[in-house]
Length: 224
Image (tube, rainbow, N blue to C red; front, side, top):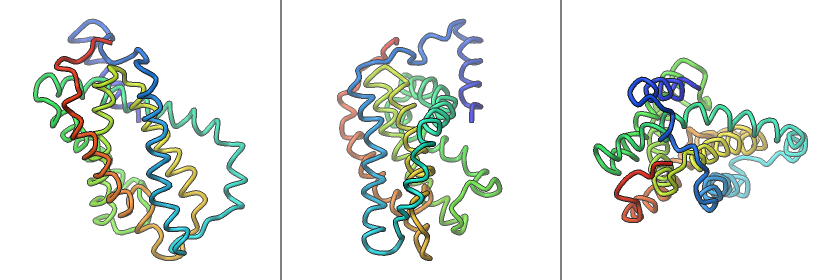
């Protein structure tokens, strides 16, 4: 998962002779809060109706057993997310924004980010057990949509860290918590997980919200 970050670090050093400009400074804390709270919010929107409707069952036992492991899981997920985000949002989003504007910074980066995962979905075991065509379709809707938000956070805050937090919390919340406490009753995974229709419905609404706020972005990328 550190391939995008490593590539960005090498590129930055070769062409600019510095690692500055990747968004290392923290930026305003309110954007950190957006990065942390948003994935928790949309997980609740997707999973709670599934539990209430009986499409999937909430497993209280697993919920209690996983609590002691959450701090270490959070650290691990943030570390792996950092490896990707240095490349996608630290380097590529500002580069696309300078050259092509927000559509490229958000959507094009998101499409590349999604396609980067497709080989893992097809042959690497990174799936939910639904047919690959279904998982890839849902994934390629949700990932570019979320990338619009992450690009907005990166450009608005001048920092890569809100995107790192979003990515890490997203992985932990879906893969580690909500999937872990949800018992599959047959059709559950067609709705939940990163490859289900639930996230593919919710995430475009989030992306559209931040797309409409693109006028708030600075004309130039902050040099943080």
